Length: 206
Image 1 (cartoon, rainbow, N blue to C red):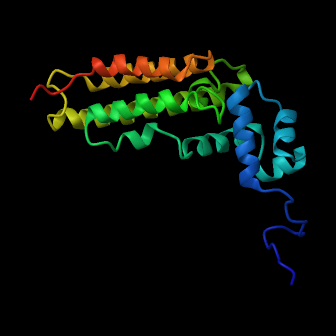
Image 2 (tube, helix red, strand yellow; image 1 turned 30 degrees about the vertical axis):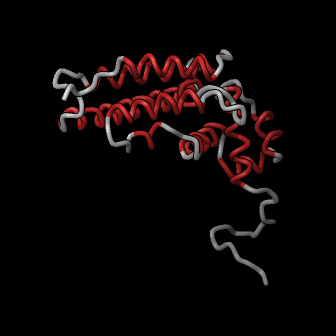
Image 3 (cartoon, rainbow, N blue to C red; image 1 turned 180 degrees about the vertical axis):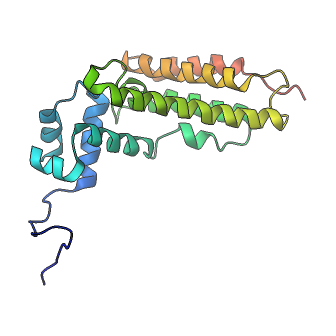
C-alpha cells in the first residue's frame, strides 16, 4: 500500500533514521561543546546522518540547538522546574540544590548545564542563541521568585525575606555549581556547597 504525502509535490523515501534518537545525540554534542564549539560535521557524525537530512528534519544549526534545549529541559533528571512543586520554600531550594549536586556531575551525561554554559560568549552570528539562553535563565529566576513570593505571602518565609534577592542568590549558586561541575569537582563537594546555602536559608520562626 502506498502512503501519500499531500504537502509535497513528490513522495521521497522515508527517513532512514530515528529523529528522536538523532536529536538526543545532537543534544549531547551541544552539551559537551557549546553552540559555537559544535560544527555541522560534529553533529552529522554524532547523529549518523548527512547534512541534507539534518536540514530536512531539523532546519539549520540554530533551529536544531533550540530543539535540543527543549529536549534538555524535558529530561527525566531535570530538577529545576519540578522542584517548584515542593511544599515549602526550603524544600523547593533543597530540591534544586541537591538535584544540581547530583545531576550536574552525573557520569552518564556531560557535566555542567547547557542552559548556563551553552553560549556564554558568542560571535555576532550566535547572538540570538546567547539571548535565548539568557531569557531561559531569567525565566527560571522569575519562576523561583514567584514561588518564593507565594511562600512569603503564606507565612512560609519570614516577613523580611526578599523573594527576588533569594531567587537571584539561589540562581547564582546553581550557575556556579554548573561551572564547578565542568571543572571536575566531585559530587560530595558540590553537596557541601548546597548544604552551606541550606543552612543559611531563611525560615519562618513560627
